[in-house]
Length: 386
Image 1 (tube, one colour):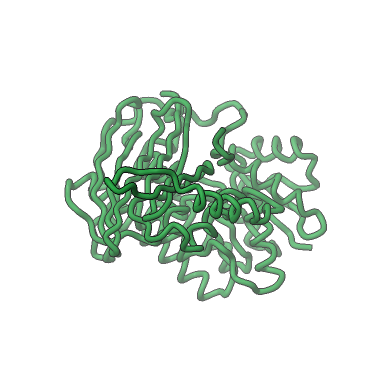
Image 2 (tube, helix red, strand yellow):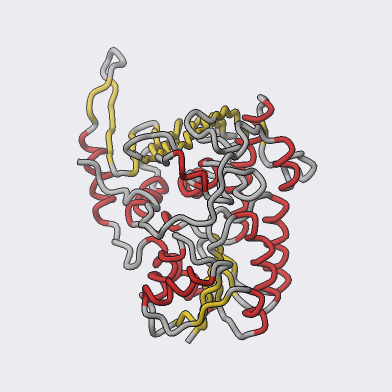
């Protein structure tokens, strides 16, 4: 029975708690830590946990905690992960992995030094439509992918950035490119790999209480010559989110949709029903995931700890996602084309470099310690389009 501690009792902690509670024979939550201890007590009461509330997480470093979920703001991730791995705990850290590549590298080094398991949350990989789409892409039935489109559309009200750590380069580390589109970017890199070049633009069009962007648009070029575009936003009403892959022979996406074309003698398209049916049959025949979202990733981490198997989303994977996001910020802030991989000498490599060189749109005008507990949205279900 693995002993689990949750560090940070904010909104996302519920997804972790509910995930662990799916596996009562394998793990038990023994502590929840938060600077505001009443929030930790509230989570314990909410879920009827036999756990204790801890104000100072350092108390837990002296105890035998097998696995820690880090659910705190991004700027704290690296130090917490390092400390807990050094103390003997495995770590599941919320997205984004950290607020700089330098911090990611420190975390990866700590993981290698201690031999502990470290996984970075990217719960959308553990959704049936995502798993099915990756298999369809790997089948080769679509031919070479020529274009990919990622729409990470979210909407957040003006007061969203009133929370004390949000909306600053120092503590949040960025806007929706880092904190919302991270899931879609992770999926893109998982399915397509990293691009060779990034050219990006960003702006703040609706939140004058934040230093960071509320929308960015990135154009990508892969080594194969394929192109892509990624839009990251918290200004899109409706929050429609999708990944579309255009191949030589067909188009597929999440939410699931398949279209295939043949060429008429004059070059105009006509439907390729046979290929559409093959792709649909492949998709329909793939298995459903038993545990989805955070529960799926927690199952993966528990299995890794129990068996020694690798996790699906490790530190290197988390770092690649942050490298892409850093390239977007570097390009959008300087106006230049950015080539990947990024060099450690890049001025955006460290958190201090990001704060100094990233575009500051506005200064934060208001700051509140907490919002009243409310339900949050953590992503589309990626169900089939109707």
